[in-house]
Length: 424
Image (tube, rainbow, N blue to C red; front, top):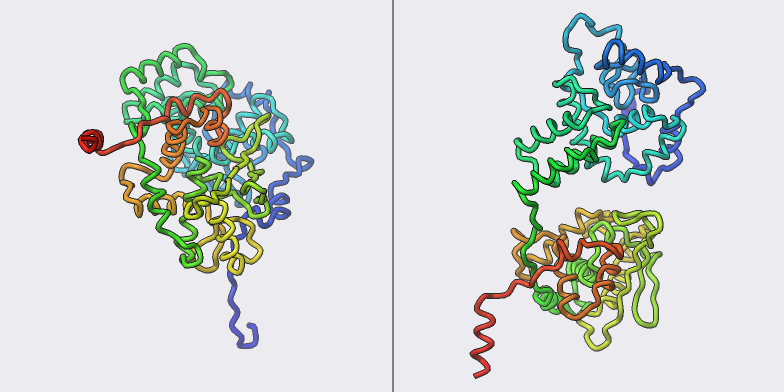
Protein backbone atom coordinates (compact mmCIF):
# COMPACT_ATOMS: atom_id res chain seq x y z
CA UNK A 1 0.00 0.00 0.00
CA UNK A 2 1.34 3.44 -0.92
CA UNK A 3 3.95 2.05 -3.34
CA UNK A 4 6.59 1.58 -0.67
CA UNK A 5 6.18 5.12 0.62
CA UNK A 6 5.83 5.87 4.30
CA UNK A 7 2.96 8.12 5.32
CA UNK A 8 2.50 9.83 8.64
CA UNK A 9 -0.80 11.08 10.04
CA UNK A 10 -0.76 13.85 12.62
CA UNK A 11 -3.65 15.29 14.63
CA UNK A 12 -3.50 19.01 15.32
CA UNK A 13 -5.49 20.97 17.87
CA UNK A 14 -6.99 24.32 16.95
CA UNK A 15 -8.60 26.45 19.63
CA UNK A 16 -12.25 27.35 19.00
CA UNK A 17 -11.28 31.01 18.77
CA UNK A 18 -8.99 30.17 15.82
CA UNK A 19 -11.54 28.07 13.95
CA UNK A 20 -14.84 29.76 14.68
CA UNK A 21 -16.79 28.49 11.67
CA UNK A 22 -16.07 24.81 12.33
CA UNK A 23 -16.70 25.33 16.03
CA UNK A 24 -20.08 26.93 15.33
CA UNK A 25 -21.19 24.20 12.91
CA UNK A 26 -20.10 21.42 15.28
CA UNK A 27 -22.46 22.76 17.93
CA UNK A 28 -25.53 23.02 15.69
CA UNK A 29 -28.33 20.54 16.29
CA UNK A 30 -30.92 19.83 13.60
CA UNK A 31 -34.08 19.85 15.71
CA UNK A 32 -36.18 18.77 12.70
CA UNK A 33 -34.77 15.24 12.83
CA UNK A 34 -34.49 14.89 16.63
CA UNK A 35 -37.39 13.01 18.30
CA UNK A 36 -38.00 12.77 22.00
CA UNK A 37 -40.61 12.15 24.68
CA UNK A 38 -42.31 15.39 25.67
CA UNK A 39 -41.15 16.69 29.05
CA UNK A 40 -44.69 16.81 30.46
CA UNK A 41 -45.16 13.06 29.80
CA UNK A 42 -41.71 12.29 31.17
CA UNK A 43 -42.62 14.07 34.41
CA UNK A 44 -45.76 11.87 34.66
CA UNK A 45 -43.56 8.78 34.27
CA UNK A 46 -41.26 10.06 37.01
CA UNK A 47 -44.17 10.54 39.39
CA UNK A 48 -45.36 6.97 38.83
CA UNK A 49 -42.09 5.04 38.63
CA UNK A 50 -39.57 7.44 40.16
CA UNK A 51 -36.60 9.14 38.57
CA UNK A 52 -34.59 6.80 36.30
CA UNK A 53 -30.82 6.62 36.68
CA UNK A 54 -29.97 6.43 33.00
CA UNK A 55 -31.48 7.16 29.59
CA UNK A 56 -30.54 4.18 27.40
CA UNK A 57 -31.61 5.53 24.00
CA UNK A 58 -30.69 9.20 23.68
CA UNK A 59 -28.21 11.81 22.57
CA UNK A 60 -26.97 15.09 24.05
CA UNK A 61 -29.93 17.05 22.69
CA UNK A 62 -32.81 14.83 23.89
CA UNK A 63 -31.47 12.94 26.92
CA UNK A 64 -33.86 12.94 29.88
CA UNK A 65 -31.21 11.98 32.43
CA UNK A 66 -27.79 13.37 33.27
CA UNK A 67 -26.38 9.91 32.38
CA UNK A 68 -27.30 8.54 28.96
CA UNK A 69 -26.28 6.00 26.31
CA UNK A 70 -26.12 7.04 22.66
CA UNK A 71 -26.34 4.98 19.46
CA UNK A 72 -22.97 6.24 18.24
CA UNK A 73 -20.00 7.76 20.15
CA UNK A 74 -20.94 11.22 21.33
CA UNK A 75 -19.49 13.75 23.81
CA UNK A 76 -21.08 13.39 27.24
CA UNK A 77 -22.43 9.88 26.66
CA UNK A 78 -21.70 7.26 29.34
CA UNK A 79 -21.55 4.58 26.66
CA UNK A 80 -22.79 3.49 23.25
CA UNK A 81 -25.29 0.91 22.02
CA UNK A 82 -27.44 0.08 25.04
CA UNK A 83 -28.27 -3.36 23.54
CA UNK A 84 -24.76 -4.51 24.43
CA UNK A 85 -25.09 -3.82 28.17
CA UNK A 86 -26.42 -6.33 30.72
CA UNK A 87 -29.64 -4.80 32.01
CA UNK A 88 -29.89 -7.49 34.71
CA UNK A 89 -26.89 -6.02 36.53
CA UNK A 90 -27.89 -3.93 39.51
CA UNK A 91 -25.32 -1.32 38.64
CA UNK A 92 -24.80 -0.06 35.11
CA UNK A 93 -21.21 0.32 33.82
CA UNK A 94 -21.52 4.05 34.35
CA UNK A 95 -22.94 3.90 37.87
CA UNK A 96 -20.75 5.82 40.26
CA UNK A 97 -17.95 6.16 37.74
CA UNK A 98 -19.23 8.16 34.76
CA UNK A 99 -18.44 11.85 34.98
CA UNK A 100 -21.41 14.19 35.13
CA UNK A 101 -21.36 16.76 32.36
CA UNK A 102 -21.90 20.05 34.19
CA UNK A 103 -22.98 22.00 31.13
CA UNK A 104 -25.38 19.25 30.06
CA UNK A 105 -26.93 19.03 33.54
CA UNK A 106 -27.52 22.77 33.59
CA UNK A 107 -29.02 22.61 30.11
CA UNK A 108 -31.35 19.78 31.15
CA UNK A 109 -32.41 21.79 34.20
CA UNK A 110 -33.24 24.77 31.99
CA UNK A 111 -35.34 22.59 29.66
CA UNK A 112 -37.22 21.12 32.62
CA UNK A 113 -38.07 24.65 33.68
CA UNK A 114 -39.61 25.44 30.33
CA UNK A 115 -36.75 26.92 28.34
CA UNK A 116 -37.17 26.12 24.60
CA UNK A 117 -34.35 23.93 23.31
CA UNK A 118 -33.60 26.36 20.52
CA UNK A 119 -32.76 28.95 23.21
CA UNK A 120 -30.43 26.66 25.20
CA UNK A 121 -27.19 27.96 23.67
CA UNK A 122 -28.19 31.52 24.53
CA UNK A 123 -29.17 30.58 28.08
CA UNK A 124 -25.94 28.65 28.64
CA UNK A 125 -23.93 31.58 27.28
CA UNK A 126 -25.15 33.59 30.30
CA UNK A 127 -22.72 31.52 32.39
CA UNK A 128 -19.04 32.35 32.02
CA UNK A 129 -16.72 29.40 31.28
CA UNK A 130 -15.07 30.03 34.65
CA UNK A 131 -18.47 29.68 36.37
CA UNK A 132 -19.15 26.38 34.58
CA UNK A 133 -15.74 25.15 35.67
CA UNK A 134 -16.35 26.31 39.25
CA UNK A 135 -19.73 24.54 39.42
CA UNK A 136 -18.49 21.33 37.80
CA UNK A 137 -17.09 19.79 40.98
CA UNK A 138 -20.12 20.87 43.00
CA UNK A 139 -22.61 19.31 40.57
CA UNK A 140 -20.63 16.06 40.39
CA UNK A 141 -20.59 15.89 44.17
CA UNK A 142 -24.31 16.67 44.35
CA UNK A 143 -25.08 13.94 41.78
CA UNK A 144 -23.29 11.33 43.91
CA UNK A 145 -25.03 12.51 47.09
CA UNK A 146 -28.51 12.66 45.54
CA UNK A 147 -28.10 9.23 43.94
CA UNK A 148 -26.88 7.64 47.17
CA UNK A 149 -29.73 9.16 49.20
CA UNK A 150 -32.44 8.76 46.52
CA UNK A 151 -33.02 12.51 46.22
CA UNK A 152 -34.39 14.09 43.05
CA UNK A 153 -31.30 15.56 41.37
CA UNK A 154 -33.31 18.43 39.86
CA UNK A 155 -35.87 19.03 42.61
CA UNK A 156 -34.33 18.89 46.10
CA UNK A 157 -36.00 20.51 49.08
CA UNK A 158 -34.28 22.65 51.67
CA UNK A 159 -33.76 19.73 54.03
CA UNK A 160 -31.95 17.69 51.36
CA UNK A 161 -29.68 20.60 50.48
CA UNK A 162 -28.84 21.17 54.15
CA UNK A 163 -27.96 17.47 54.52
CA UNK A 164 -25.66 17.73 51.51
CA UNK A 165 -24.01 20.90 52.82
CA UNK A 166 -23.63 19.39 56.31
CA UNK A 167 -21.84 16.34 54.92
CA UNK A 168 -19.53 18.61 52.91
CA UNK A 169 -18.89 20.81 55.96
CA UNK A 170 -17.87 17.78 58.03
CA UNK A 171 -15.50 16.80 55.23
CA UNK A 172 -13.75 20.15 55.67
CA UNK A 173 -15.43 22.39 53.09
CA UNK A 174 -15.01 26.09 53.85
CA UNK A 175 -17.75 28.72 53.90
CA UNK A 176 -16.85 29.85 50.38
CA UNK A 177 -16.87 26.28 49.02
CA UNK A 178 -20.25 25.59 50.63
CA UNK A 179 -21.59 28.78 49.07
CA UNK A 180 -20.47 27.52 45.65
CA UNK A 181 -22.27 24.22 46.32
CA UNK A 182 -25.45 26.09 47.25
CA UNK A 183 -25.30 28.23 44.11
CA UNK A 184 -24.69 25.23 41.84
CA UNK A 185 -27.55 23.17 43.26
CA UNK A 186 -29.87 26.18 43.16
CA UNK A 187 -29.04 26.72 39.49
CA UNK A 188 -30.22 23.24 38.46
CA UNK A 189 -33.17 22.93 40.87
CA UNK A 190 -36.80 23.68 39.99
CA UNK A 191 -37.32 25.85 43.06
CA UNK A 192 -35.20 28.56 44.66
CA UNK A 193 -33.91 26.07 47.20
CA UNK A 194 -30.80 28.16 47.87
CA UNK A 195 -33.01 30.96 49.22
CA UNK A 196 -34.78 28.70 51.72
CA UNK A 197 -34.75 30.49 55.15
CA UNK A 198 -33.37 27.37 56.83
CA UNK A 199 -30.53 27.17 54.30
CA UNK A 200 -29.67 30.81 55.01
CA UNK A 201 -29.69 30.08 58.73
CA UNK A 202 -27.39 27.10 58.14
CA UNK A 203 -24.85 29.46 56.57
CA UNK A 204 -25.09 31.84 59.54
CA UNK A 205 -24.24 28.88 61.74
CA UNK A 206 -21.28 27.91 59.55
CA UNK A 207 -19.96 31.46 59.73
CA UNK A 208 -20.15 31.52 63.53
CA UNK A 209 -18.47 28.14 63.84
CA UNK A 210 -15.86 28.83 61.16
CA UNK A 211 -15.64 32.56 60.37
CA UNK A 212 -14.25 33.31 56.93
CA UNK A 213 -11.30 35.65 57.09
CA UNK A 214 -9.53 37.71 54.43
CA UNK A 215 -6.53 35.92 52.98
CA UNK A 216 -4.13 38.64 54.14
CA UNK A 217 -4.07 40.55 57.44
CA UNK A 218 -1.50 42.94 55.95
CA UNK A 219 0.13 43.50 52.59
CA UNK A 220 3.55 44.36 51.24
CA UNK A 221 4.94 47.83 50.58
CA UNK A 222 4.89 48.68 46.87
CA UNK A 223 8.01 50.81 47.38
CA UNK A 224 10.03 47.61 47.85
CA UNK A 225 9.04 46.33 44.42
CA UNK A 226 9.43 49.76 42.81
CA UNK A 227 12.97 49.97 44.16
CA UNK A 228 13.76 46.68 42.45
CA UNK A 229 12.16 47.81 39.18
CA UNK A 230 14.35 50.93 39.23
CA UNK A 231 17.39 48.68 38.91
CA UNK A 232 16.06 47.38 35.57
CA UNK A 233 17.34 50.40 33.67
CA UNK A 234 18.29 51.67 31.12
CA UNK A 235 15.64 49.97 29.00
CA UNK A 236 17.92 49.58 25.98
CA UNK A 237 20.20 47.27 27.95
CA UNK A 238 17.52 44.96 29.36
CA UNK A 239 17.02 41.36 28.28
CA UNK A 240 13.62 40.35 26.90
CA UNK A 241 12.85 38.67 30.21
CA UNK A 242 13.65 41.69 32.39
CA UNK A 243 11.85 44.08 30.04
CA UNK A 244 8.79 41.78 30.03
CA UNK A 245 8.77 41.51 33.82
CA UNK A 246 9.15 45.27 34.28
CA UNK A 247 6.38 46.16 31.81
CA UNK A 248 3.95 43.69 33.35
CA UNK A 249 4.65 44.63 36.96
CA UNK A 250 4.38 48.36 36.35
CA UNK A 251 1.02 47.88 34.61
CA UNK A 252 -0.19 45.60 37.42
CA UNK A 253 0.76 48.13 40.10
CA UNK A 254 -0.54 51.12 38.13
CA UNK A 255 -3.97 49.59 37.44
CA UNK A 256 -4.55 47.03 40.25
CA UNK A 257 -6.22 44.83 37.63
CA UNK A 258 -6.56 41.04 37.65
CA UNK A 259 -4.23 38.75 35.73
CA UNK A 260 -7.14 37.88 33.42
CA UNK A 261 -7.46 41.53 32.38
CA UNK A 262 -3.70 41.94 31.84
CA UNK A 263 -3.62 38.83 29.65
CA UNK A 264 -6.35 40.38 27.47
CA UNK A 265 -4.40 43.55 26.60
CA UNK A 266 -4.10 43.90 22.82
CA UNK A 267 -1.67 46.21 21.02
CA UNK A 268 -4.48 47.31 18.71
CA UNK A 269 -6.35 48.62 21.77
CA UNK A 270 -3.41 50.71 23.04
CA UNK A 271 -3.73 54.41 22.26
CA UNK A 272 -0.97 56.98 22.77
CA UNK A 273 -2.14 60.31 24.16
CA UNK A 274 -0.42 63.57 25.06
CA UNK A 275 -0.37 62.51 28.71
CA UNK A 276 0.56 58.86 28.32
CA UNK A 277 -1.20 55.67 27.22
CA UNK A 278 -4.80 54.46 27.33
CA UNK A 279 -5.67 50.76 26.97
CA UNK A 280 -9.17 49.52 26.18
CA UNK A 281 -10.28 46.03 27.26
CA UNK A 282 -13.30 45.09 25.07
CA UNK A 283 -13.21 41.36 25.96
CA UNK A 284 -15.62 40.00 28.57
CA UNK A 285 -13.87 39.60 31.91
CA UNK A 286 -14.92 38.74 35.46
CA UNK A 287 -16.34 42.19 36.21
CA UNK A 288 -18.17 42.54 32.87
CA UNK A 289 -21.94 42.82 33.02
CA UNK A 290 -24.97 44.55 31.49
CA UNK A 291 -24.76 48.30 32.02
CA UNK A 292 -21.14 48.20 33.22
CA UNK A 293 -18.34 49.96 31.42
CA UNK A 294 -15.42 47.86 30.22
CA UNK A 295 -12.04 48.67 31.78
CA UNK A 296 -10.02 51.59 30.44
CA UNK A 297 -6.45 51.48 31.74
CA UNK A 298 -4.95 54.95 31.95
CA UNK A 299 -1.15 55.04 32.29
CA UNK A 300 0.46 58.50 32.50
CA UNK A 301 3.99 59.42 31.50
CA UNK A 302 6.46 60.15 34.28
CA UNK A 303 8.93 62.49 32.59
CA UNK A 304 10.54 63.29 35.93
CA UNK A 305 11.11 59.61 36.74
CA UNK A 306 12.08 57.71 33.60
CA UNK A 307 13.12 54.63 35.57
CA UNK A 308 9.48 53.99 36.50
CA UNK A 309 7.70 55.52 33.49
CA UNK A 310 5.23 52.78 32.64
CA UNK A 311 4.27 54.36 29.28
CA UNK A 312 7.89 54.40 28.13
CA UNK A 313 8.42 50.81 29.23
CA UNK A 314 5.34 49.60 27.32
CA UNK A 315 6.38 51.36 24.12
CA UNK A 316 9.89 49.94 24.40
CA UNK A 317 8.48 46.45 25.00
CA UNK A 318 6.29 46.70 21.90
CA UNK A 319 9.28 47.84 19.86
CA UNK A 320 11.53 44.99 21.06
CA UNK A 321 8.89 42.26 20.58
CA UNK A 322 7.64 43.44 17.16
CA UNK A 323 10.02 41.13 15.20
CA UNK A 324 9.08 38.20 17.45
CA UNK A 325 5.30 38.37 17.52
CA UNK A 326 4.37 38.23 13.84
CA UNK A 327 0.58 38.71 13.62
CA UNK A 328 0.01 38.23 17.37
CA UNK A 329 -1.94 41.17 18.78
CA UNK A 330 -1.69 40.24 22.47
CA UNK A 331 0.68 42.56 24.27
CA UNK A 332 2.43 39.93 26.37
CA UNK A 333 4.05 36.99 24.58
CA UNK A 334 6.09 34.01 25.77
CA UNK A 335 9.80 34.51 26.41
CA UNK A 336 10.77 31.47 24.34
CA UNK A 337 9.98 30.50 20.77
CA UNK A 338 7.47 30.41 19.20
CA UNK A 339 6.55 33.44 21.39
CA UNK A 340 2.84 32.68 21.64
CA UNK A 341 0.44 34.85 23.69
CA UNK A 342 0.55 34.05 27.39
CA UNK A 343 -2.52 33.46 29.55
CA UNK A 344 -3.49 34.55 33.03
CA UNK A 345 -1.53 31.71 34.67
CA UNK A 346 1.72 32.84 33.04
CA UNK A 347 0.89 36.44 33.95
CA UNK A 348 0.54 35.38 37.60
CA UNK A 349 3.78 33.41 37.42
CA UNK A 350 5.70 36.40 36.05
CA UNK A 351 4.32 38.69 38.76
CA UNK A 352 5.23 36.20 41.46
CA UNK A 353 8.76 35.99 40.03
CA UNK A 354 9.13 39.77 40.29
CA UNK A 355 7.85 39.70 43.86
CA UNK A 356 10.43 37.07 44.76
CA UNK A 357 13.24 39.00 43.06
CA UNK A 358 12.15 42.10 45.02
CA UNK A 359 12.39 40.27 48.34
CA UNK A 360 8.66 39.76 48.96
CA UNK A 361 7.80 36.47 50.69
CA UNK A 362 5.98 34.57 47.93
CA UNK A 363 5.21 31.74 50.37
CA UNK A 364 2.76 34.20 51.93
CA UNK A 365 1.81 36.52 49.07
CA UNK A 366 0.48 35.38 45.71
CA UNK A 367 0.45 37.31 42.44
CA UNK A 368 -3.10 38.44 43.22
CA UNK A 369 -1.79 40.28 46.28
CA UNK A 370 -0.61 42.99 43.86
CA UNK A 371 -4.22 44.22 43.86
CA UNK A 372 -4.19 44.43 47.65
CA UNK A 373 -0.85 46.23 47.76
CA UNK A 374 -1.60 48.72 44.98
CA UNK A 375 -5.09 49.64 46.20
CA UNK A 376 -4.00 49.95 49.84
CA UNK A 377 -1.02 52.11 48.86
CA UNK A 378 -3.32 54.29 46.76
CA UNK A 379 -5.65 54.93 49.67
CA UNK A 380 -2.73 55.65 51.99
CA UNK A 381 -1.41 58.19 49.48
CA UNK A 382 -4.71 60.04 49.50
CA UNK A 383 -6.35 58.65 46.35
CA UNK A 384 -10.14 58.94 46.46
CA UNK A 385 -11.75 55.57 47.19
CA UNK A 386 -14.10 55.95 44.19
CA UNK A 387 -11.06 56.38 41.95
CA UNK A 388 -9.55 53.22 43.45
CA UNK A 389 -12.77 51.31 42.76
CA UNK A 390 -12.93 52.47 39.15
CA UNK A 391 -9.25 51.79 38.50
CA UNK A 392 -9.31 48.29 39.98
CA UNK A 393 -12.59 47.35 38.32
CA UNK A 394 -14.96 47.32 41.31
CA UNK A 395 -18.49 48.65 40.95
CA UNK A 396 -19.54 51.93 42.55
CA UNK A 397 -21.38 50.15 45.37
CA UNK A 398 -18.83 47.39 45.82
CA UNK A 399 -17.60 46.76 49.35
CA UNK A 400 -14.85 44.42 48.16
CA UNK A 401 -12.04 46.93 48.70
CA UNK A 402 -13.11 47.82 52.24
CA UNK A 403 -13.70 44.19 53.23
CA UNK A 404 -10.81 42.36 51.60
CA UNK A 405 -8.24 44.67 50.00
CA UNK A 406 -7.62 47.62 52.32
CA UNK A 407 -4.82 46.23 54.47
CA UNK A 408 -2.15 47.94 56.58
CA UNK A 409 1.30 47.83 55.00
CA UNK A 410 3.58 45.43 56.83
CA UNK A 411 6.65 47.10 58.36
CA UNK A 412 9.60 45.97 60.40
CA UNK A 413 8.54 46.11 64.07
CA UNK A 414 11.71 48.02 64.91
CA UNK A 415 11.15 50.61 62.20
CA UNK A 416 9.08 53.03 64.27
CA UNK A 417 11.46 53.06 67.25
CA UNK A 418 14.51 53.46 64.99
CA UNK A 419 13.05 56.53 63.31
CA UNK A 420 12.17 58.10 66.66
CA UNK A 421 15.69 57.52 68.00
CA UNK A 422 17.28 58.99 64.87
CA UNK A 423 15.49 62.27 65.54
CA UNK A 424 17.49 62.76 68.68
